[in-house]
Amino acid sequence: MPDRPTQILEAAARLIARRGVRGLRVEEVSAEAGVSTALIYYHFKGRAGLLRRTLEFINRRAIRYTDAALDASDAPLAQLTEMLLLEFQDVPQVRENSAAWGELRATAVFDPDLRELLADATREWTDDLADLIRRAQAAGTAAPGADPQAAAERLSALVEGLSERWLSGTTTLERAHELVRGAVAAELGPA
Image (cartoon, rainbow, N blue to C red; front, side, top):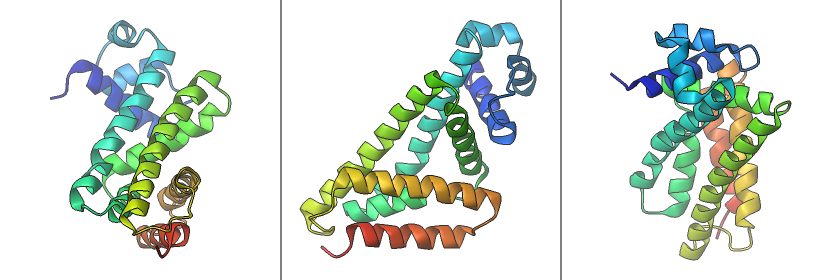
């Protein structure tokens, strides 16, 4: 059984994935988590703190399942490809994370505080991808002329867009994987 703050964050992520951020109320989260609203205010100081920590929670959870790519291979290009593909898994936690991330991103358009947090999380992700691209270039498995940071930004943006298409049923999981593999080849293509 998770501790109370984790239980609350799991409930908030579920609700955000299902219904979005704009109408999210602390009372709904407390009912979903099976805790009192006072406990949420105690741990998160209010709705803004809860949203901030939920974004961090979703990000940490994604890191846990995408870091499996680092164990799958010693080749940086294979690790990069696998890390991107792991964003598309037909398991509840990944689907929930992807949906919640999309909802948080959409809300950040109107919420400067959330926008800053989302920008930081996105920057960390693209920096990790750029590091793998640099390592692949050093290993001679990725085109040496590619700008690692720009390639990482394009690949992460593609994954975010494909994620929304996959979640909405406008593309299949297999097609999303095929498009990601093709994009990696096009971006970093023969060394």
